[in-house]
Length: 186
Image (cartoon, rainbow, N blue to C red):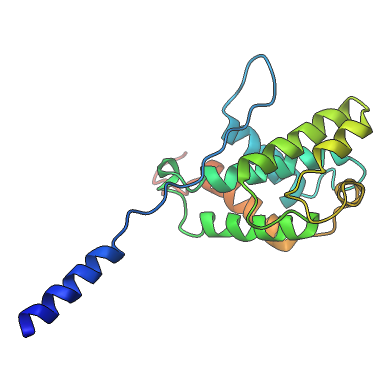
């Protein structure tokens, strides 16, 4: 009797040990020509826009690009590449994405690559002066608000402390300055 109970418990435990689904991945391609490291480029833009607050209003194209970059960073910091990053970086970026998606009316369960593509397409269209193309890019089913409202929000983003914290965490994980103990003139 005890052996049967043990075997049932063991079998149910093994059934619960299903492999985890692969982490979501994303790519960030800005266009033809030389492509610097997309992570470094994304970190610098996200840090500049969200942590330092540069171009927070009136530049919807730059903001749309920064939103796409933040989405990319969330997936990139979830990879093995960033195992040596400070422990809270990935979770801070997840909180940043949740706040950013809530502010812009993006469904929380939207696929990352779809969100990236929509905001990069909108950014390119806005830079080219093609408002109608930007509206189409932001009219996908992943959005919970009308495209016009999203464009207006991109042009006048409110302060977002979680997003600023995530941007700073990503910058710190990549570009942090190490404090070396200099015993001589350094």
